[in-house]
Structure formats: C-alpha cells, structure tokens
Image 1 (cartoon, rainbow, N blue to C red):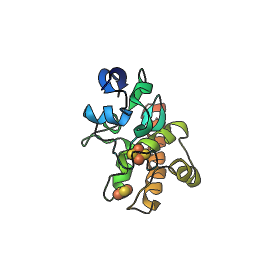
Image 2: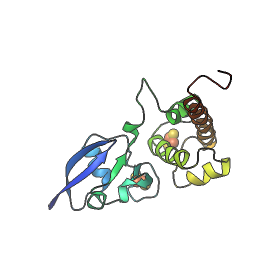
Image 3: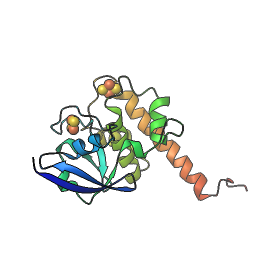
Length: 170
Ligand code: FES
Ligand code: FES
C-alpha cells in the first residue's frame, strides 16, 4: 500500500503521520490516538466524526488524509478534560443532553464552531447548524437546550474577561 506522510497541526501541536493513499482524516486521527471522533456511517451522513479543519466543521470520514495535509485540526481532545470541561461540554452534561454519547463529540465540535462564529444563536440557527449531525437517543431537544445554555455561559464568560472580572460597579 502506498504510504504518505501527512503533516497536521492537531490541537495546536504539529504531527507528521503515516497514512495510506486511501486513508481518511478520521483514519489517521483514530490511529494516532484521537479516538474522540467516532466512526458511525463512514459515508459523511451521520456527523459522528465531525472535527474542525482550519476552523470549519468537517465530517472527517470523507476528508482524504492527503487532502488534509498542512491543515490545522481541532478535535474534542483539544477542548477540555474531565477536570476542566469546555463550556459547551459542561452545558451538555448539565442539561443531560447525552445518552449513549456516541454522537456527542461531533455534536460538541459542531456546536463549538457555531458559537465561535455566532455567539448568540437563535434556536432555529442551532437546529440548522446541527442538522447534519444525527442522534439516535436524545430526540435533539436537550441538545439544542444545551447549546443555547452554552451560548449564555460563554457570553457571560467573555463579559467577565472584557470588564476584568470586577463587574460594572468596580
Ligand atoms: S462517520 Fe463520518 S459522517 Fe458518519
Ligand atoms: S446520545 Fe446516543 S446517538 Fe446521541
């Protein structure tokens, strides 16, 4: 099998990875230990494998690894960890927006991309943004509530950063 070298910036660190000509970005991520991105359909239809490529959400199972060469990739491992969850992750937990959890990394990455581009989305905008990500468990209502909650939390956090944490009456 023809081997390629693919250089990716993954969550801020540069990696040079071996890939075959037929490997997808999802293949090389998972083989390199980034198993947060899940393999569902492997055809670009479920969104479970969503990661951010140069800031844009992409279904990594249909991105050829060779095409991703030189890209900056963000995966769920780059957001938060068990002790320090990203606000989007924390909002999913606090809103009970997950059951089996298989769709959640993709949901969280797509939601993060949405909120970075549109910090105060309407419910319709959240539903539209997540329309390519399937969930077989939750019925979507709690997921949408979690994303709207995350928007509130991130808005409040950025306000604290902007005023130095002292509030308006400092
Ligand atoms: S596994 Fe990639 S979209 Fe389903
Ligand atoms: S929580 Fe099970 S598929 Fe979404």
